[in-house]
Amino acid sequence: TVRERTAKNENLSTGDIEVFADDLIIYSESDTPPIYVKDDDNVDDNLRLKYRYLDLRKLKMQRNMAFRHKVTKLARDYFDENGFTEIETPMLIKSTPEGARDYVVPSRVYPGSFYALPEFTQIDLEMSFVDMDDVIDMQEGFLKRLFKELMNVEIKTPLPRLTWKEAMERYGSDKPDIRFGFELKKLNDVVAGCGFKVFTDALAAGGDVRGICIDGGSDKFSRKDIDKLTESARSYGAKGLVWIRAGEEEFNSSVNKFFTQQQLA
Image (cartoon, rainbow, N blue to C red; front, top):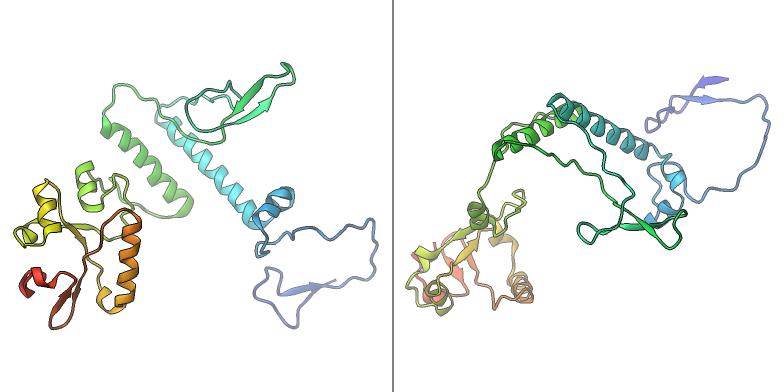
């Protein structure tokens, strides 16, 4: 008999009801499972993989598989609508030296021989008579539709673009994570002729002097914190770290004697 619970549990989908049994028949017994089929079961990943058939029954994993199915279907629909023909690459192939590392699978038909199992999924677009913008437009259209239909997120296209030079100037990397925020700022004009040999030698050699501004960092970083950053910089091959602390009334720096207050500002 299904009855309304006296003490309801809002954290459970069935928290408003409870079931009362009149009789019970046990057809077979089972051991306690090695992992529980519930999302909040804090289990080591190795144990999850060992008992994968149980782990995949969790609601979270079921949702992941359903979402992946939707992504795959949307991808096929989108590229089919845009004139592409899907050519399935064989999963078990002859091992080749290039590309990603693969797993080898022994052949029962040819003892001592092995197949290679590529362990990844990718979409490889083959397009003719196109330029860079055509390729980017096709990819951006796919991403825009995927985010809208599967996550109800509207992304604005075209997506922001950076030239290689601009990426290196601002982030020091040709694949920057722009969410990081700490952009490099060129300080060549400010430090030219300052008398600080580290800076002037760098400029003379055709290099740059650049800095990173940490907004609000003056109140957050103690001298001990700065010393730790200096050691960290040295561990990556730098000879040291120059810092400038912007206070309310004056500027302090590890190179105070080479600059005026106006230059530091």
